[in-house]
Amino acid sequence: MIFREGDPVKGIYFVISGNVKVHKKWGRDKEVILRFASDGAILGHRGLDTKIYPISATVLEDAMLCYFDLDFFEASLKVNSEFTYQLMMFFVKDLQESENKMRNLAHMPVKGRVAQALIYLEKQFGLKDDEFINIRLSRQDLASFIGTTYETVFRVINELLSEKTVAVHDKYIKIIDNEKLLLLTTDDEI
Image (cartoon, rainbow, N blue to C red; front, side, top):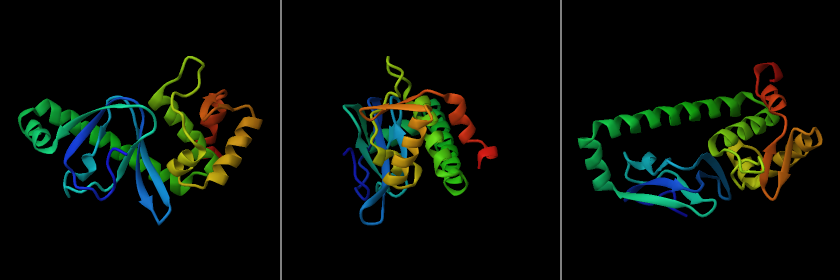
């Protein structure tokens, strides 16, 4: 755990290497994964205004992070306009991704959301040498990311396996048929 929802903001983190999930409590025993962070991503920025982290960040595998004390970070923003601009562009992209995810949760069937998530994960984390997506992800984390249950993700992944659209090995997923996945994400399939 890097920081926990409700903790006071003492600084900002940048991911140098590794994979991190950014998540929020949902009810007593559930969580929603808002995004995954990898090399170059920023963590903790959502608490800059309230000085309380509204989300949690947890490492999924060994990672290296760079920590900036909040006072130093804020001073850097005030004197470095290029850094402030790049941070603003990150916020814009983050907001757009959140809006798209919210739209998909409301309108896309679960199979399409699984397909969209796999395409996103491949783009975000790239591929290992064996062409599996370079993130070891439990089906529960995938379910939390797309806003459904573990059982539903289990069923959909099994459907995609039987259709030879994906392959799975030790919590790694390989996309075998990109075109079929893309079709599941289009309005024609909704």
